[in-house]
Amino acid sequence: MNKIAVVLALTLASLVTVSAQCPRIINRAGWGARAANSAVLPNRPAPWVVIHHTAGAHCTTDAACAQQMRNMQNLHMNTNGWSDIGYNWCIGENGAAYEGRGWGRQGAHAPGYNDRSVGMCVIGTYTNGIPNAAARNAAQSLISCGVSLGHISNSYWLIGHRQASATACPGNAFFNEIRSWPRFNPNV
Ligand SMILES: [Zn+2]
Image 1 (cartoon, rainbow, N blue to C red):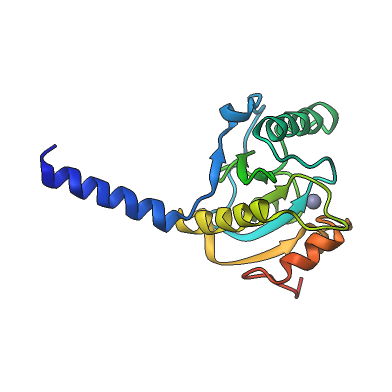
Image 2: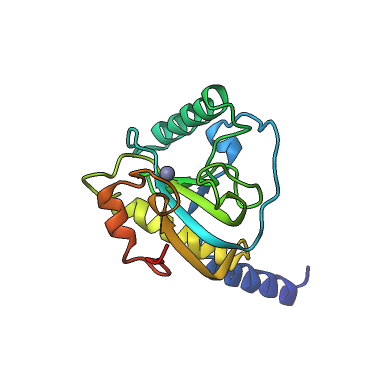
C-alpha cells in the first residue's frame, strides 16, 4: 500500500470502530464453548431486544465469567436439551460481552420473541440490586453495536423477559433499571 492508501485504511478503521460502539467481546472460542448441535436463522435486523438475568452467581473476572458461560451452556444443552446456550449474548460484571448464539442465530430465551429478537443476559441475580456500571455500560454498548452493525433494527424496542413470559426475570431491581434505558417499551 502507498502512504495515501495506508492513511485512508487507518481512517476507515477508526470510523468503523467509533461507529460500532462495541464493548469488549469474548467470542465462543474465548470462553471455551462447545459446538452447537444445530442453528436456525432468525429475522434480522431484530426488532426486539430482550433483557435477562441468569438468576445465578455473579462474575467479575474473565476466568469466572468464562466458567459461568460454560456452566450455562452445559445446563442448557445437557439438562434442557437445547442445541446450544440459550442466549444470543451474555454480559459479565467484568464489563465484557460473551458471544452465545451471537447475532446471526436464533436464541432460545423468550418464546414468542426468539425468532425476532436478540436475547441478552447479564450474569448474576438482580432481584435486589442492579448490575454494576461495567455490566450496564457493556450491555448498552452491545445494543448500540448491534444497531451499528445492522443486526438490531434502529427502531428496536427493549423489553425485560417478564414482559414476554411469566417469570421474575430480569429481577425486580434490574427491571426497574431498564425502564429508563433507550427504546424501553412499557406497552408489552
Ligand atoms: Zn430471562
